[in-house]
Image 1 (spheres, helix red, strand yellow):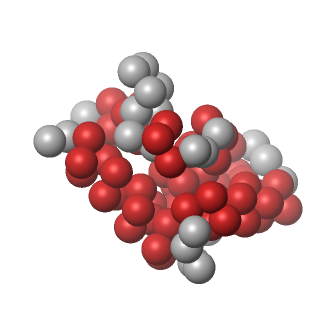
Image 2: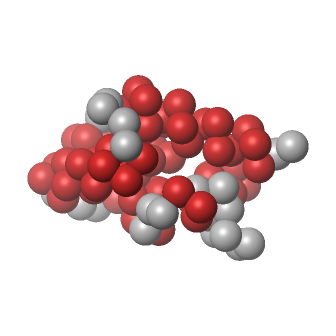
Length: 86
């Protein structure tokens, strides 16, 4: 169930709910971890990426979603997933 939710959340398969938000696949992946409460360091460890790279992805995500912080980005992502399940 969890793995399937992550695949849908990331936009794999038929475009997924985050595809319409204008995020790259990597940004969508980072956003899934943000929505799960992970820090930039933790996300970097999970994705084998530098913390600085993750910070840049987060900056791009916030700009593309037109939100001010990670919490707001997570809310947008969770809402997109909830709408996709309807």
